[in-house]
Length: 518
Image 1 (cartoon, rainbow, N blue to C red):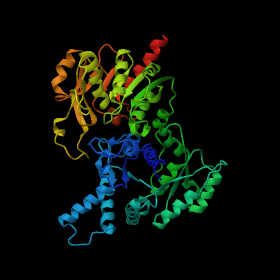
Image 2: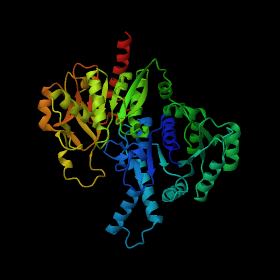
Image 3: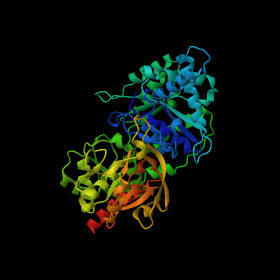
Image 4: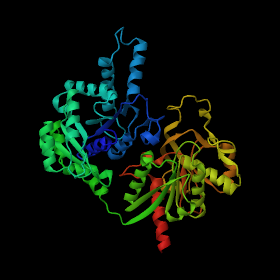
């Protein structure tokens, strides 16, 4: 079912295989009618993740990229909307030569074609994939998932036996007496069988490990060998999941099903995720959303930087409309993330002002960058009416992008994906990245108004990163760490390659503590 952990399970399976030297790619199937996740409410659906090619996709693709350390594309996210749009366009062109267009075979053929295309698509920096993970979102039995499950059933019959394996992730709840219940698993396996699919491996999600008695019970009722019943108990850190699945013997079970050579695992990943912390910092994230999944990539990027520095990052989510200003003194760093709309804006500006004037490490992202410019324009330049065109009347130091002025359709029309940014010599930004030219991902409609840049720079704010005539990074000199980016560095952060702005921010937070204690 949704929210159970299928995405983390799929990513962990990929990591296990990658640790054994196999090239892995991944596909996420979302059975909703939207073309992509771009226009969906993040408060309900979670973070909108942006890929290098500008695709706005489900947050699970972010997990795939982080666990597998690969860059995916639009082709790796299949939605019902995409599939039906493609089939209808083909029908309008006359591609079906007068046939009656139906779910079977036309929709299922399109799904299979999309999976095959994504499976064979070249991944930058990686050889042709040996294995393609395909995660089907939603719940077994839901009407919107039916065509995708049918397509998988067909592919299962079309491919050689050792070319596919079906992993069914299922809930193992606990009753009031503390007993793990297998009945939901039995029913979901039955529902899957009614669709012609037989699970080869069952991954049971539970709050505590599944014991041998429960495994034998699932094995007996679901017609699987006991080694094919895998316990996936909740762990403190999602990056430990591959290690826990390794202990359950999933690697041997997978290689046996797929007819793969058994190889010893590369243990670098496990050494990384079990590294001990030697210090701790407290970071406030000032946002209008109180839901962690909305800013999942930021949370993970802080974790990546913290692990690289052996520093545990403790996050407190502050409501931009309700937090107490004096509470900010309790934190070692302040982060203002991206977002849309005017709600909570004044609270974000106040937090930025506090960080700037109290020498507290600050990191601003996208809207956080724009509000850092607004704060500086108001409180340093002296333009009390400085604001963003998105927020209403005033001096628009933040204006809409020229190419956005005539845009009417909201889906997929922002400035999206990779763009090259040039860094200025002698700045904090180039010190973090260690090179002049960088590539980062974007998702925005507004930018710093070129009309006001000379006055703002004259007052002391440094625009240390640019993309042609667009301002991409700003920083305040003579401050322990005050940096904001128009782009989203969190989208490119990996456990093995932390994002430079996050690395610098966490390091500055730790140095603040050291300075205070010294």
